[in-house]
Length: 401
Ligand SMILES: *Cc1c(COP(=O)(O)O)cnc(C)c1O
Image 1 (cartoon, rainbow, N blue to C red):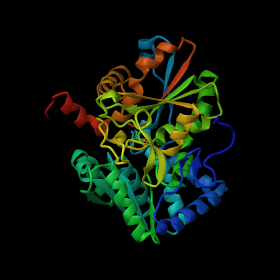
Image 2: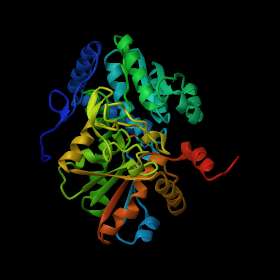
Image 3: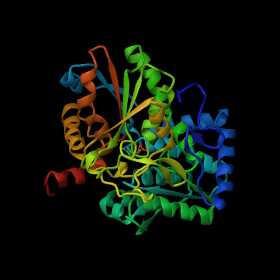
Image 4: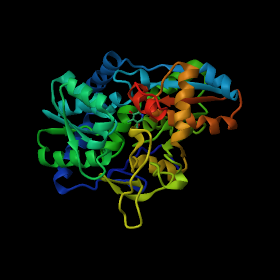
């Protein structure tokens, strides 16, 4: 299927073959209500005004498109530009989407907010917007991640939310998501579930994409202003896929811009020890949607491996599966080692310590930049800052405090 002007998903929530609503009966009504509310509000002038006002005054948007001079010199084959989502309040792109979803929750009269979190970034972003509106907030987090990300656990508590430790399964992000869905089934009347990526059942992948598309919209006007044409390529890391989708979506019909998603290659895609479902997975259902998934022959979800907690997820948002099959976007993977090398390189060259997730996008420049000439413009979506990852990297480097 060729990408065209038709806007997806279709009315059943499908992007080509992917997406849909694979949920228990009790959630069907809640999802329909959410979709109806969203479709009514999304073009409403007051709603849009409030959303953009909050993004400007609370998040600090627009985020700059910044010329990376020393990285550009290092590769010598084209200008490298950084979309600085790391400068947002709370340190990553996730706040864009939570700002939008909390406005939906408020409009629907919901009193209780729940969310899942892996590295804790989405938990922090959700607890932040819930605090701002004075709403009760519960964050589900795998026991393994609670251990690895203790600083974010404390941040979430400081913001007045409760953290629920999840011990089931591998005690990581997918298990936290299961538990959040279970809570939602039980408390659906007064509870709004803020999903953290372009994953889950319809309408979530569409809603999260639309709210985070402010990134790509800004990119279009900033590209015109700064280099007077559209970028030759946009590179973004892909976990669930929200930072990439937000940057890619406004460019889907701009044919000259290559869209490149970088998955977590872990120990190397060929070893099977990774978190790269688009590179080494097959279609299956996880968390309410059909999409590429890391599964074994009997459909059991495989365990994942990545140095980056935010990319350590066996599934991916359904729209990416469609973009992959249609050929409109390209999906590659880089290893933990390559990401760690890029983490250090970007810190030293640019004075910007990127998130380990983002470091995956940077690592792919080693391969990508060979194919460009000096007139080209390449954008890296800097999904977040690396403060949260300092301890992980220090440990790998053998440094003790
Ligand atoms: C959560 C996170 C990601 C991965 O999530 P996506 O939905 O794929 O964007 C990437 N980068 C940062 C900084 C994150 O916090």
